Image 1 (tube, helix red, strand yellow):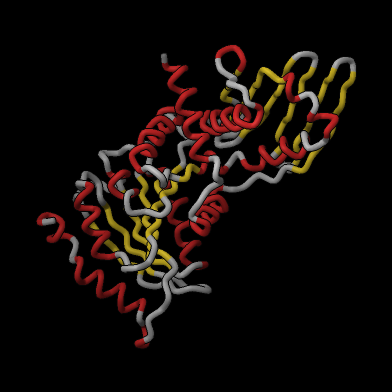
Image 2: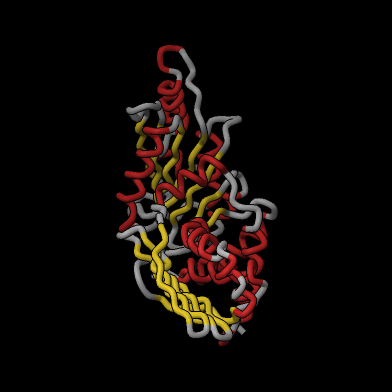
Length: 324
């Protein structure tokens, strides 16, 4: 902290934030301490816009940790109030090359006591110099996105390792939340007993997705509900279509095939089914979720479905098997 103290006056920042929070002598309720990390310059503006959107909707103390800053190791700027329906505070830190313990000390000094701390991690990798683990240990929840880069499978492996280290509170992966509309289409289609009776014959899946993380999660979920492994020749994962989206899913087996093509602009899933000599074409509603909606869902609920931990274990086993 010696180097930081010459650039960042923590006492002054804290006084400014507390004054904004207690304007007029009345302390305002704060919903959460939101810690946001980014080290991707091309996404910095996108993240800032969405952080300010959260601040306008929910009374929040936001600490934006910028790992892209060049020059001095630490800088800080304070935006004490955000207009709209809530009153929030934002403090920005440039933390390039800062030790994780230094960052943790800053957060301990500036977060509001007895208010939940949430981490939204936007790093190009999850395991950056142990900083993620240092921050995630105090977060309930930690929100990550393993998808969207050429290294999304590497990110998934890092997430699984860190989930094991964090125990009962694994990070919430937006890549998993993102497949929910696809799950709903598949579950809705096979609610029909005429279609469901063919599921025991399904022994192969094909998944096309713009990022492989969503495809891996969907394969794990299908394997769990159908009690299949879908490894080796029983599964084909192809990188195709829009990034962070599942474009197509095929379930096939003895004398049956079900193809689902997800048309996001039309909010429609096009289904082609072939069972023996019979064919069927249908269209089902498909409502994709944008990233900000997923973030808000994770922020507000702080939890994920009860099978998520089990699915992480399935993903870990599948990735380990494919690496050997």
